[in-house]
Image 1 (tube, rainbow, N blue to C red):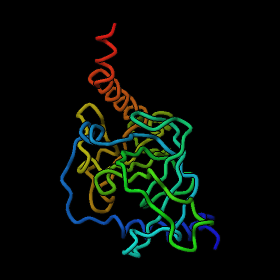
Image 2 (image 1 turned 120 degrees about the vertical axis):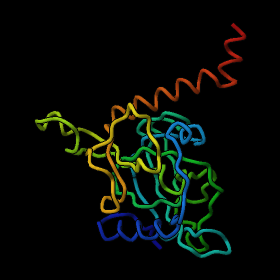
Image 3 (image 1 turned 90 degrees about the horizontal axis):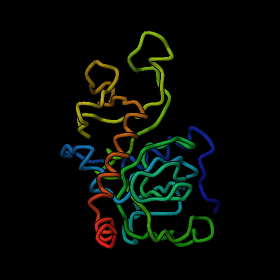
Amino acid sequence: MIRCRWQSAIALSAMMACGTIATKATSIATISVANLFSKSSDVVMVQVVSGDTEAYQYSATDSTPWPVCKLKVVDTFKGGRSGGVIFLAPCAGMELDGKYILFLENANALSPKPGFEQSSYGVLQHPRRVSDAGYGSMHVEYACVFDGRVPDDSCDYGVELNPTQVLLPKSLQTFPKSPATAETNYKRWVRQKALVELLRTFAQESNKTSPQHNDSASAR
């Protein structure tokens, strides 16, 4: 059996459907982006390399399809390693070659179903899952939704997120200015540069308070 690789929009749609069912939640409390950063094991920008919708299931006793994505780490703010690989399980609503900022948690090791050992990614000892039932996954894309009277001002790389779920500091503006609604899936955009700067600030603050940093400072 050949591993299912995303070769078309149809295959990707199937991947998204499986992942969406697997991670559906009815009610989730809001969380600040600072707390989301703090609770996550990894905060990274990634690019989707490939996906497998056939070889894995939720557990040995639950045959629910468990789609897996292979991700290349483009940038890291916490954990991870630039240029490294992360396996995400389950992976929902992600596009082949698409870029995302992800807030991740450690997940249980995952083995391929019998008969898929040679056509899968093999045993995944340290897969990750998206924090807060999927709200820790934020699509990165070029968009013309920002303030400015000319395209050079209003078009920029942005990050799409749900500001009613992931609470942002007031200094971080969301666009367009009209309120997010069910019609937009409650999504809004922030400039990628602004969010990246915020995440780097969190990383610096975290490093200052980490035990390893404090031990090194004491040694000096």
